[in-house]
Length: 231
Image (cartoon, rainbow, N blue to C red; front, side):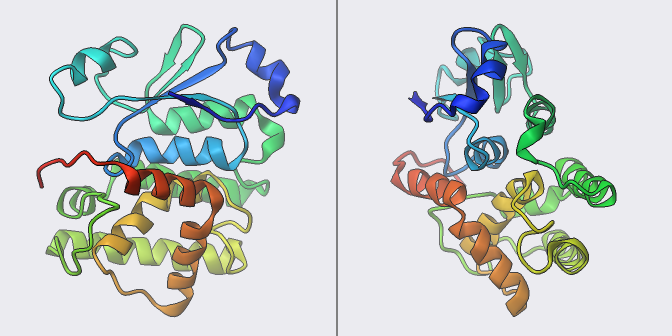
C-alpha cells in the first residue's frame, strides 16, 4: 500500500471521508485498464489517496475484493466506510468533491462531449478490450487486429480527431488534461503495445499522454511488476 503526498488545500474535503482519507483498491498495473483510469486522474490532479493492490487470478483475489465491494470488481474507491465501485462513478464523485480542480472541461458543451466519450468508452469498444487487452509490458505489433478491434480503433481515431480539433487545441482532448484523457490512457497503452499506426497529430497526442507525469508513473510501476497472466 502506498500514499500520495497530502495537498493541504484538500484537507477539509478529505476529512469528510474519515480519518483514513481515500483508499483506492486496484489490480495489477500492467493489466488493469479500469484501475488505471481513476488512479491516473487522482494522481494527475493531486488528490491524495492510499492505494491497495489486489493481484488478479490468485486464490484469494475474489475474497479480498469482496471485502470492499460485492461487485467483485476493481477499481473501488473507499470513502470512509462507503464503497464507490465503478471507475466512471469514482471519477464523477471526485469531480463533484473537488470542483476547483477542473477535472472536467469548464465549457458546458466541451464537458458534455467529454462525458459522452467517457461513457462510450465505458460501455463500448468490447472488441478492442477483448482482442487487444492492456499489457503494458508487451510488444506485439499487429496482435489482436480483428475486424471488430479494427472498427473500434477507427472509432477511437475519430473521437481523438474531433476532440483535439474542436476542443483540445491540439494539446489534450479538451485542452488541459482531464478525466477524458485519463479514460483514454489505457487505449494509448494498447496502441503502444500492439503497434497501432496513427497519423502524426494523433501520435503526438498519444506521446503527450504517455509523457504526462501521472501516466508515466503508472507505466513505470507496471513495468516493474513481475506477475504474468495467461493470454
